[in-house]
Image (spheres, rainbow, N blue to C red):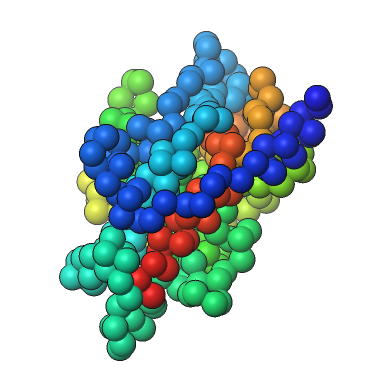
Length: 309
């Protein structure tokens, strides 16, 4: 069986009827599996750092049970909605209580809470596109799989509106030397049978063509997205526009790939050739999540967001 045939086969294997939000929350809580790492084990493929080499890691699951898939979907949507409500914790609590009870929020509060759901998921009867849904879930997987690294100093939550024209994310982190580094991330999903390489090439091209603009936007809005305005962080941020255009060692690029397809042995092999300025050790990073029921999990994420509406 070819890789494309295998990808198509995996795409055609649906999960049985999905569990309720309450059942998924209970599974996650009683099994004490409350983070995405509890469902998506990590494998490092770094080896020895070298100029022009993309170091990468993968999270592969082809055997999630229905209960595990539902619980992962719940962990994702519960985290996403807590962030979306921001300081309006009472509204998040109302959404969560009704979602787990399986009850509808009464008017006019349903419109209030729906306004926090709609920008990324749409509303029942008026959904945002599946393409946007799958991409948004991929961005959150990247964020939740990387943000708890102790080296990370700054990594804002994914953008709150899927039509935002900026980059998908960035990290400021401490290198092994203790020096601060910046990485601009681009996230791509592939939920069809098309080439993974083609999806990755789009990410590389976007970083190459739009990276300077993305960096400028990050610098200009930094104080609004980060609570860390320490002297060393701000010194790095002010350097970023000039550093990016030169490919300076303080900047780097990362690409996230979320898919249901089988991963090739070296999915990010073409990254260095597409981003030639970033040719110093550690400047290129890849992250791949291959989950056989990725589409079904994304659909459950949206379903749980809508349960109380």
